[in-house]
Image (cartoon, rainbow, N blue to C red; front, side, top):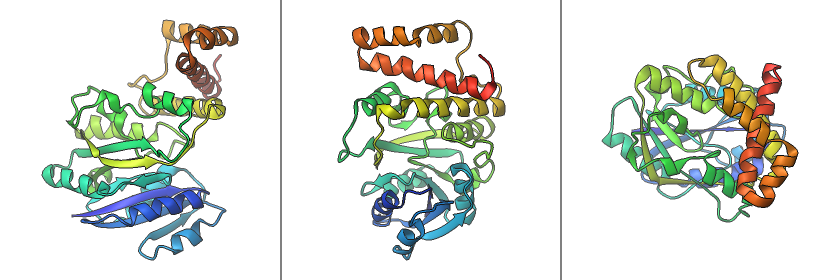
Length: 292
């Protein structure tokens, strides 16, 4: 069995170097590493050139879904492993993915590993909220092994996931997404709805997320997620991810500045982040749809 690790990147050469230092040191499994440079203007090419065994593909600036598709097309492995350029693989990471696929050779099996914040970073209160709320990752809803969650596609996290190349080739990432968010979940949905994807959670396949996220990025981040949610629903109209009706009205009410200030003072920072996130998510939806 051979694994192909696919890493899309854009203008993050220094972080990518950390990523490659870790992933190229994996042992006990046959693998290749493919970096797809999505129109970087920094020294990404020079960084990758320092890793002679890494395959480098350069494309015009597009989107990470397009980059992942291009990397998958180039891959020669039986198993595709998707991670981000800010992901630091812990020892045994690839071996854990390989072991689960060896024990479960069915094409429909997809393996999800565990992504934790890099402890060497300053973990901000907003990062703690993202982890505990499920806005970033919702591992707390899963048990190790095959999940019985009714919507397993919601855990198709491309920071740490692997699947058979033969399964991926049936669908691929949609190129309709032009911003961050939802393109991985949308692919997961198609794999589940059309091909019976079975998600296996292996918490011992560990990577560290080397990316500090501060409260100052909340508005931009969640507006982007909201706009991408509109794209998701256009592609999958039977799946509702945008609040509607009474829930939407309630969220808009709670997102008023004076109400948010009240929530932050009396309800704590996590409650504030929750409703502030929904406020900005709905702003992104409004921008994408043109609806008030």
